[in-house]
Amino acid sequence: MMQVADGNLGQLSQLLQSIAAGDLTARMEGQFNGVFARMRDDANTTVAQLTQIVGQIQASASSITLAAGEIASGNSDLSRRTEQQAANLEETAASMEELTSTVRQNAEHARQANQLAIGAHGVASQGGEVVGQVVTTMSAIEASSKKIAEIISVIDGIAFQTNILALNAAVEAARAGEQGRGFAVVVTFKYQSHQRSAAAAKEIKGLIEDSVGKVADGSALVRQAGTTMGAELGHRTGEPGGGADGRDHAAECGAGGRGQCGGTLDGRAGQPAGRGGFGVPHGCGDGSGGGPPCIGSGGCDGHPGAPARCAFTPH
Image 1: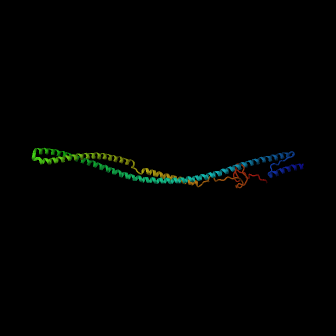
Image 2 (image 1 turned 90 degrees about the vertical axis):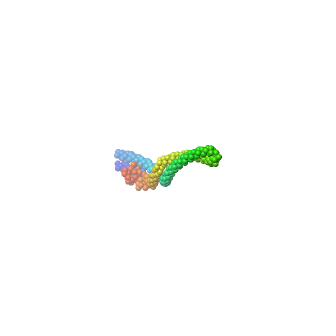
Image 3 (image 1 turned 60 degrees about the vertical axis):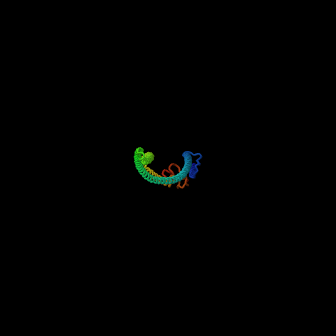
């Protein structure tokens, strides 16, 4: 009886030694009776369960290793993309700086245009004053021309009356006969002179009337030009710097906003891989990647929810 018990316990001891050595293929075989038969069945069942658990652990470890590799690859790709995005941001910041410089130049040009507009307004105002003076001068010339025409009309009337008097004197000289012959010669000469004077006065009157008409037309045109120019000056150059000042202010605001935007881009480009630089552990143990892979959802050793040691260690 003791020999049978020793043999049964010896097989159990050999099975436990095989398990301790990491060999899960060993089993208890042979005929056992009573409690030893139950012990054999329980031991074999335990080894089978351990084999199944270890297989599941190995499968989980392989899956976790594969997932960790994929995460590490994704991390590297994310870091590369982040660096590329940082480079793009730096290029964008440089472009924004160039754009800001261009906008500032436009603002300077707008200020210069404002000064030119103010100068043009002054010149236009002086031109308006000159046109007003021309209108006044043309009005005076028109009045003088009318007076000259009136004087020519008076001269024409005097010449006509003188002509009548000369005719009357010639008639009286003819009646006087021989005594009035010398007087008749003088009267004839005076009559011819008055005829020439009347013709010249008539011609001058025609020229003066034509000049008066042209001066009147010129005065009307100058007056109309002065009215139009005054209205245009009041409408377009009443506030010469308003539009240019508005564009100048808008350009300066645009330059300031673009400069602030460029500074923000530079600040973001200064940290290219801040979110993509985290590490992914490839193994458990001391965190260096050389230990066995973790099992379960808790993580590696030292983290909450993780088993104390994942590997199967023989004792």
